[in-house]
Image (cartoon, rainbow, N blue to C red; front, side):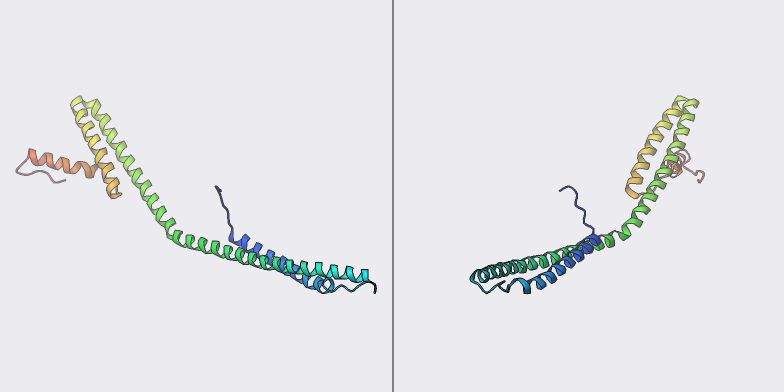
Length: 191
């Protein structure tokens, strides 16, 4: 069965309705039992007495079957009530376990969307720098393309491992400092 829908409220109200039907039938059986199990012969002859005995035997057989049906009905109501309680308990447990998940999931989604927006802003800025460099000269364009590719790789790796965005300035500043350190061994400007 691909889909099973069990609503505990509906199952509980159904169990109550089925129990009411059972108690109504039980009351009807009690009223009928007194009148059908001891049928009084219509006359004092043999035929009337035999017919009354046959009717009484059939009534006794019916009452025995009705008693079995009542027992089955009671078990059915018990199982239906137990199933409703079980489903309600399972729903409660699931709801309790998912209660904090909604807030956590929203927090993760918010940080991912903020991180993705910051990453997109940094990529757009880096691409803008790359396009400017293409206009300025091919060597600068090549260096910018290499820097951009390196930044994108580092930013993606940083985001996947830490969940935080690596800004372009945080990426480029150490590279510039290394370049100045190599170019000016005695001292370089502090960024």
